[in-house]
Image (tube, rainbow, N blue to C red; front, side, top):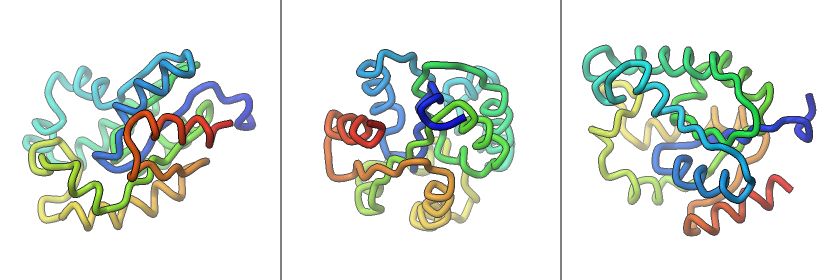
Amino acid sequence: MNTAEKTNVVLIGMPGAGKSTVGVLLARRLGKGFIDTDLLIQARAGQTLQDIVDREGHTALRELEAEVLTALHCHDQVIATGGSAVYSAKAMAALGSNGIIVHLHVPMAVILKRVTDFDTRGIARAANQTLEDLYEEREQLYQHYADISVAVGETDQEGAVTAVLAALA
């Protein structure tokens, strides 16, 4: 299936990149539905992402996320993934089978300003892992899986949507 036949737009990127916020606006502009996979994970687990990390560990959250993403079968949706979706090759293959994978790239300095709740946000990371460590680790994975990478760090939400739409055109 080539990208012209894919009906979903899948947003990947760091926590604070704007996947959920930009995703809602993008879905509206494209006339598609919107799915926030973090909400699907919380609904399935019956607890918040942070509770999962606190009680079961970050790897449990990553495994649950992979299960939810692999089981997701939809069309004509903008899908905002959790920042750790890229740790599962199987999940990314499933998302990419009917979706154009768009990496919302934001510089580390901007992420640091946006993510003020690093320890309570429900981020799937090792206990001693800093936001900078996570950024360095994940950015390589985002670039690996992305069909398109869009720089959205130096713009507002509407500017990010416009940039993504231009990249998709």
